[in-house]
Structures are given as C-alpha cells and as structure tokens.
Length: 183
Image (cartoon, rainbow, N blue to C red; front, side, top):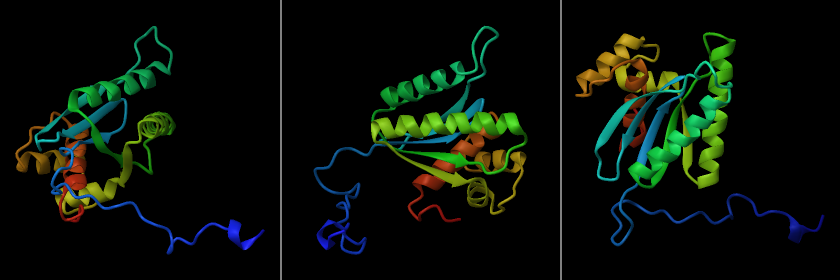
C-alpha cells in the first residue's frame, strides 16, 4: 500500500471545534435525557432552560401484542420526548453489565439496540454510565441499594416514585455536573 493512502495518525488528525454554552451568538442550550432502561423505564430530562422533569414509562406489552411492540412504543416515546423537549444534545443511559435473569438481559439488550440505533439516525450523542458510577455519585457508595438511591434523590429535593426514576435523576445529575460527574 502506498504511503499516501494510509490514514493520518490520530495525533495529526484535526479535532472538531470546541463550542461552549457561553459562546456569544450560539444556539440556546439543548436538552439532556437520562434513561434507566427496562420494561419500566425511569427517565429524567433537563430542558434547555435548566428545568428538570422526571418520571417512569412502562413498555409492557399487552395481551394481544407481539414482543416487538414494546420496542416500537419505546422508539415512538423517544421521538415524542424529543419533540416536546426541543433538540436533545445527549442521552445518558444506565449501563447494566449483570442482570437478574436471562429475560431481563434480553429486554435490556433490545432497549439498548433500539436506543443506539435511534440516536445514530438522529446524530444524538449517547453514553452508557456504569451502575456503580451512578450509585457512587448519588450516595458515595458504589453498591447502594434501591432505597438508598431514592433517599439520596429525595435529599436533593426530588420526589421519585420508585428506584427507576431515582436512578434516572442521579444519572442526569451526573451527566450534567460541571465537575464531570465526579462524586
């Protein structure tokens, strides 16, 4: 192979320009969405003006639906959230490496596949954050239980209805922390 056809080394490659939110004349800040993926998905959204809303969404199929319908509803819900929130700058999701069972692992993989494909189609940045990182950020303990996560979010002034919403809130706070998500 000729030397001129070899790709440029990473050190010589140009990087995209760095644009800060405080640059004059830039577009308004875009929204950030955090997801705790699952049949009951916890979500938290920071809108462009800094307001935070959160909740849970259930993607359990009904009696007469096929197994893929939950994923189609998930994709439709992502699109609806984007339209309501305005443009998303990024989506952070809880990256689970160990599951309670085979079904949970399959469902998580399905949600993750659809999320990553949906983000790629729209050029939205997405990032998985390990469970222990989120728990350590919220509680100071990487193996905190569900009750501790809910309590930590209540201590920060939120009112999560369950651990799914609490996890999503903690993830959103981690993803938008000016210190880079360090506890």
